[in-house]
Image 1 (tube, one colour):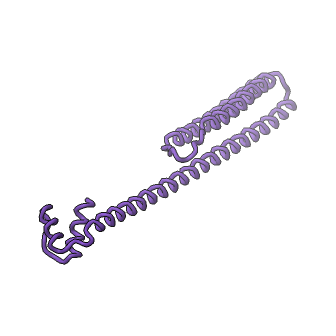
Image 2 (cartoon, one colour):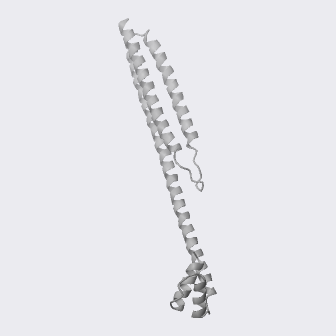
Image 3 (cartoon, one colour):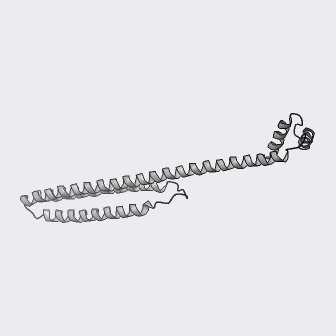
Length: 192
């Protein structure tokens, strides 16, 4: 009777340890998922809804855990009634179950790693798109500023130095200098 009780207790401990380990993995994966959800989104890049993928993965893991939990409980019940030879077979099956659980955990970890890499790749693409957009905006601004200066400069072509000095005086600008300096001063004032 003592050995049957010891084996049942051992089976319960194995079941509890297995459940605890899977809960820890689940919590760790949830933590990683929460960190992914905190990443900022960029409207120019297609959005990846990692929630559905993670939820399916955890649903699958939960089903496996529930199946293993039920299986381990039934094994414990049977262990209470079996002899030494059958007990050895159960220990062998328990090892197989443990190996399967480890394989599932490795598969889950690989899935999360792949998801993490996908999110990182998309974040890199978003940053690149943002940098390119900023560069294009800066280029457009420079072109626009150059066009405004050229347009302003065209208004002063053909004016004499006296006419340019009078215009500078009207604007409270320095009235001395060469024609080019006066034109540059007026253009700068026009394009502020």
